[in-house]
Image (cartoon, rainbow, N blue to C red; front, side, top):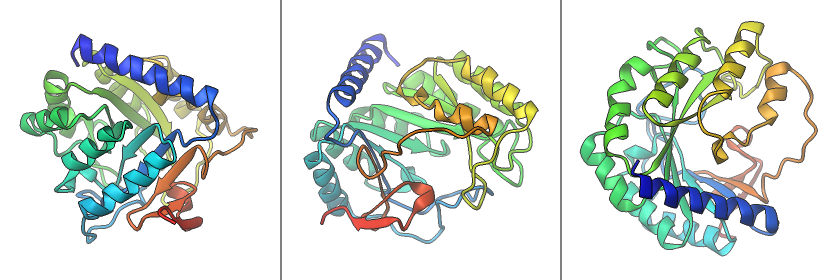
Length: 277
């Protein structure tokens, strides 16, 4: 990421954080799903299928228009695997044209130098890739060994901010891999986060003592950007109750491929209100 691009990203990031703190009558973050289909089948994941067709571009534009009307600061494109959508670049461009920060969550498999350059041209602001282990296994093939070449491409060609998320919990067999992944991310100049992931039933469980040590070690690495505003995970990791107000449905929206608003990816069906109503 070039220095000038990095500074622009930091300024935009500071602006949206300031707006979020000063005004409570708009949506801060919306996750929008243009495609439920995925090229992988991770054992803990319940957010994909292997048959869905892409949501048409014009439908996505209408949903983005509604999010702009609601004053949304950030739209993050997720899935499934959004890189499989044939009109992803146009979706990103349209988000940016409405004055909204455009983010992307991907499994990383589809990044080539040419594809990264197209995302630069589309105006992508930020990318997050979650890497689950060092070597692929039956739970996940989102491994550092498979994706390291893609990460090197991103380090060389991307003009957008990149965060590498390592994970603990949810059946991940080698929790120490999270620290290896995080160190590699920092080495390549990326920010890094660690997430406590749910199991296949969508349940978050306290971490083991070994997992806790890794969790806290990874949290000490990387940059403290907006992706690290996740203090609630400390309580999850320790198995403690956490007193907070969930702002889903007001400050945060999850919009599925059918255009319905849900509390989050693990509460699909509730409330299931059409975004465009």
